[in-house]
Image 1 (spheres, helix red, strand yellow):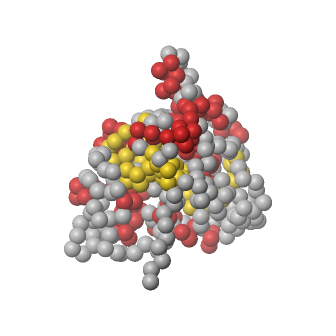
Image 2: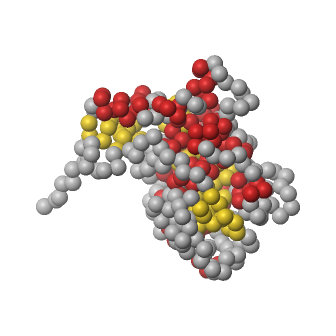
Image 3: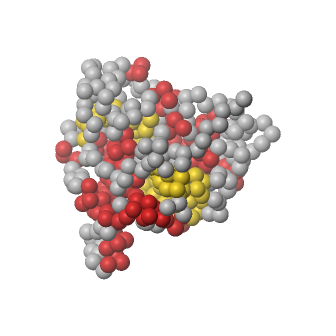
Length: 384
């Protein structure tokens, strides 16, 4: 006898839908696009980064606030001609913290900083399970694969409350705009824009992915009897092809990839399965140094170090310890580090909004403001 688990209740009530969508309207009025339409746009002052900082009360960036420039300032400021003892090109970190420790707000805050400091192309890894990017929804270019079906729901925090069914057209009342792409190169060269925040949902059909791999100098052993990229692969495997496209084909502009829950695509338990999961994580590892040279920064988030493949952890040069957990005091707890600069726990009693950022040799404190979303509902977008 099988147990039938019912799906959460849904409603297509226009009244409920409009009430929710109206909550996104107020911050949208202050976006660069809205100001341009209204005729009150000063190109020198009203960038997306400016309107985000104004809306959330984020202070101007000031590297002098930090004790060690090679820790937080070097992590955020990108240059190909760095000062002495600072790294050049793209940067990368892994932020570790339990649910409720502020990882999502930190991810939104650092996305805003990347727009402000580097005029970066910011790419958030879209997921059907999460929508932590919603504080930045009014400034979001939502990127969906062309020609596929999309199911959209606004789900209440209380699972007993009904979900609100939405159409793609309804998304235009939540995000700045919805744009479509055909393959990773099309996304990178035609869709992504400097100084803009994007949430990208992967193409489950994997269009263009195998061709990208076939033309690349980077090779791994594909699964027996099939190509490395196949429409039967898990949709998240599309991201490995996107990284390959960015390294091999550009464009040459600062780009930040926010890999929320990176353990979903590069878990420690990854194996050589019929999808070539291990081979693709190896491909990502082998592309990492070139990602930095090509100006790509990776913001990786997860619950625990052990959730992420050590193939990737060995490449990450910064760590961020979120509040509510003890920071490591031994390099044995940090794969890829030969030493850690802390000899005592300082983070377990930190409040949400304060974290410890560290390299192998230095550490400094990082604080950020809360960035509330317009509603507590989660936006679930399922591409099929």
